[in-house]
Length: 187
Image (cartoon, rainbow, N blue to C red; front, side, top):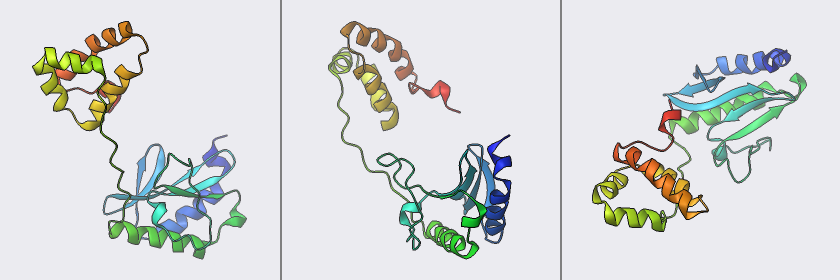
């Protein structure tokens, strides 16, 4: 039996509350995601032992009933969720308070802004390659910071110099084409 079948009563209860709002239902990441002005506000999901109401920018919610949790402390920055292990725990007026505040926060563009990461430390093998091949350096510099970081981490995690050299030779054509290390896995 699927989690959504086990928690059908609770899911329907949450959906009924959400349906009374202006949120628009979409499907992302295999879940019902609710948006306003194309901004993600919340999602609901059934797990093995509970149903959860996730707020994308929950870090900004006042949390008057002290029910919100950070799913992965130290990793999840903005998202917060409210767990329910039975329909008896669900109070429509309390849930509505959180949902309405989340909607207003989204309308007011109150969103978590990722922190700027520290400057990228280029490994020696890459610096040497750049001095020998300016076209390669220019191609690397034109990549997004995210793609640059992927390549730097890929090279830096190789413990042996021989492995670094092999990796460098493999990534060079990809960099010259403007591709990221893992682009083929992204949709």
